[in-house]
Image 1: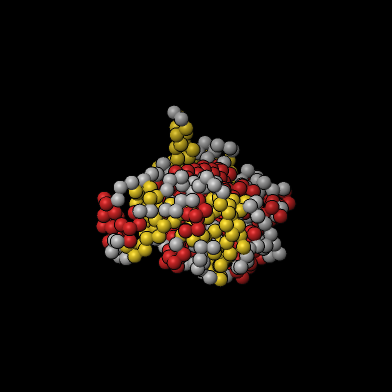
Image 2: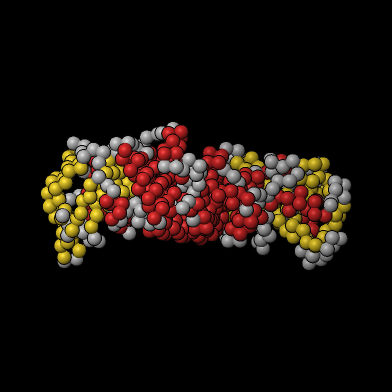
Length: 393
Length: 217
């Protein structure tokens, strides 16, 4: 017999109480693991999505930076249009390798009775701006061809070669046009899966805005000189706003911060409650076992031995709770993710809570530390029990 | 083996000073079977606690096997209790979650010593519980539980067994059996000091120490 096996057997004497205390620890560790994993997944997902945009900064009409963040990540439709005469200045800048206008809009699809999200872009820049894309079929070569996102194709069972018609009244008069599906993008796991990608000229025609663009995506030739380029453009072109991907990330991180703080606060409160519950449970056990502890002191247990027995009971309890919590978090990852996503203003696509061994070990270690902290006072109380007082009853 | 000289024990109960033991001089030899009797409040349990190094006297000197006990720190008393003394209590104090074998082996855990399972089994055979080694205390009778407690007291080969009302919770037949078991251990050279109210059993010890108002009569 060892001190650990003795601790196990002592806990098993009150199965229901131990199980309930363990469940409390498991729930709080599951919440902690899920939130940290979610936050890590959030940051990784955000970086991944920004990387997939393939650009270093966006030139947009002066306005709200949050709107730009939404534009970059969601492809949101914004009411303002950029004057594309600025393209000359962008193209003439030696430090800019690509300046690609983007026009994001919504267009009704009368055949399918729905409204599609249209992302107008220069098809010659597609592989530079979207380097991670894998396209089945081909990149559109003319203004009457499009490529479509994975989810759109899957949802409507669209195949390469199919014809899709759109109509628009954006310029006051109705314009209809049919497009041939030249390619389908393989699943990206991001927002790209939900778009129809159309040559920008075709979108401009449909909207009757020949020089219209929502933004210009810019890729610099030397990333180290990006600040210099941004400063230069900001000073030389009035009425624009330049938002770097780092600023987009900060902007989203700011929006998400309150939700993160809220969710972490929930975890901290849950942990505190479970720590108090562990302490209470162990204190109850000590009160019930006062005579037994006195007997152990009489037959040769030192004060440190009784301290050790109690602290090991709490560690066994909290470590088991920690392990159970990690299992619960991984089994219920989808549900927990869905719940936490409800708090967040923007969430990158894809699975955010994933099993990370280092995080799981850290959470279990944390539950052990919690056990030590929650167990110190009860263990100290137990070590103070004198054999004669206990045996007298 | 055990020498007590001028032992006094005074408890403070509120504003009152209670003199539980008053000038006890006592000598108990190796291999003796001594019973301590007296009315409630006579000081017999206090004396047993001092003999068992569970409590310290207010005044006086005590030695056990030539070792001076008075003034010894708590850690030293713990060591004496582990190595030289076995305790048997009226309430048995077995741990419910442990088997008979594990209850008997419990003191080994505190002594950081190991014993072969066969040795523990032979001890259980000595107390007549060889068939119940895997049972839990709740599956045993009172007499059997006290036998487990006696086996537990014997696990570290003590020089003396201190038994506080060992038959107090048992019927006549079991009381007799436990007494006979203690007698047989005594015949192996173990000193037995038994506190009891049972005058019949006390009378069958080698010597009776009668206490009244904290003094030996």
